[in-house]
Length: 74
Image 1 (cartoon, helix red, strand yellow):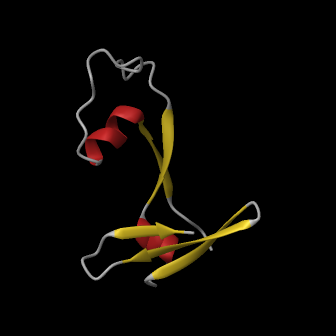
Image 2: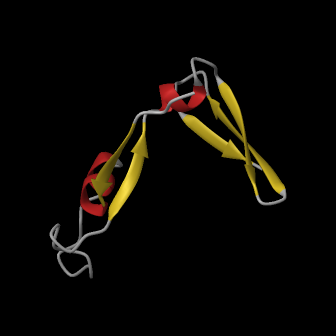
């Protein structure tokens, strides 16, 4: 399985989530902002509607709802 990933800045991630970047935030400059790995949900789910994720000794379920939103539960 090969996943397509990309990198986005913190500001880009917040904008994608609908959050405005605060002017007084410590990472207000995109030049100094760290990049965050990004992956398409379709690549992660591989065409399915849910996925189990192991994190340490815990297992989480990532699923797509009927309204096409993502829900992560333990």
